[in-house]
Length: 474
Image 1: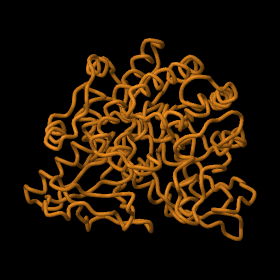
Image 2 (image 1 turned 135 degrees about the vertical axis):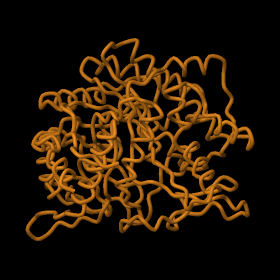
Image 3 (image 1 turned 45 degrees about the horizontal axis):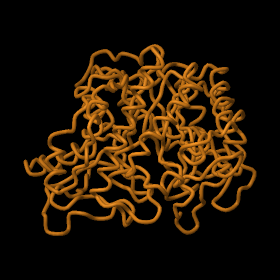
């Protein structure tokens, strides 16, 4: 749809950036922090672990000052459950509480809105040893953890996210399960238990605070059929329901998606639902939806001949396709990064429109960004025009979604600073701020503003007016 006049980004738009605790903080065993599953995941040869990461734990004030200089309106970050409650349940670590208390105060001193994720892939290892999300006691542990965070920070934090990318943890479980990978039956039981835990956190937040806003943060992408073949359209519906709508239908409507439930029953994957679970889930009403978006996916009809499921780009940790449901297909209209990730800026507009038309809730983009092999030049700078081009295109499509009627309240690109990429370490960088370290050589860990940092600073200062002018002139 073309518009004669383009509306600008709304007043108060939350221009921000995102990180996660285990990928930036380091200090993996300092000041009473417990271990998480991420401390036991094997990283590929030559790729760093999470022990030091970007050393945000020790450089927090310096990092927040850089956020303020960029003019950020919001900072989406996660709290390490194991830093606050070392075993996941039981004794609370006061030094862990203090770190996040100081971070929140520092952000607010600069007028930056904290957007806090309760759980971002780093389940405390103490809980994992007891069965993790397969053990219903983890639900109670999560509710208790949420209560502690609400009690300590709820007077200052107005935006909360429950669980980051729950659908990724179910559909691509390798990175979140050191050791034996659960069966599909176990994974969907874990998924259900997370649904209950997330709902309990939402209900608790609303009971404790009248003005807080809380919601889920799944990875949601539009799924395209490869061709106009109706069988491909069925495959796309299958995958969009299983990968996306399952998670938001539960969060917003309190019910299992019917197509997905049929799939679960047919394959014997349906979870055990305890009395009261669905009532708890139905009571939980999110105030907004967090959306992590990187690129769309394209699928074709299943052949059901044993070849539907294949590794993405040879990466055995990321399997695409499911036998008898759909198979991955190539989309020749899209570009790829050097790491094989697709680039689909228009797909962001498509995704936002689909989410909003289905759920009619405000949306906050909680992740979107470009991973690239940034190089520090001899002049001590990082010239990442490719990141500027990427984000400019995506910002433009977000603006078009706003003009389409989508209630988009903010945009937090991944990531504020360089952090440990799960599969490529510091070879693949996402940040506006360069962290001067390699995989094994920590160097000086200096923070260096990239070209994209200055560009984004100017976008924020004008509330995206440069994006609006660009779109208006096309």
